[in-house]
Length: 192
Image (tube, rainbow, N blue to C red; front, side, top):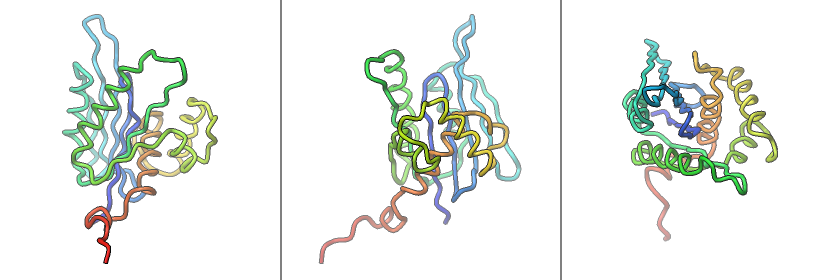
């Protein structure tokens, strides 16, 4: 059985998820909060790339409903999971609570079924996959992720979504850093 890897660029206002098998994208999803007079909604876009191609757009009344919609559409299991650790600049607390809640929600939904879970920092996956230094501004790193993924994999109509492209890089980082199948299934060897 091919190993499967999910990478998540978490966020409350917007984020992305990519499922990889080896280096081929099997599916991708994104969410974005939209402000409406009647109340905020989350637009969810989901694409599964296996034949037949599945594309879905949904409007959800809450972040949690958006996660549930994505979880229900992604059939690939078992998998290794990587969720980016949030970067929090010193002295900047605005949005921190929502970011922590969204990251926790993503781990709560996707974590229990995962074979393994890792939390790479932005610098870890950016250096490993994009060869970017630790002081690269986030916007520049996102542009590089979009450029790199457009050259290396098919992300369908979500190919220009920065969150999805970063999630693809995080999934690829997970593929390169996941425990080997023998360690995952058998656990550590016992001393003689």
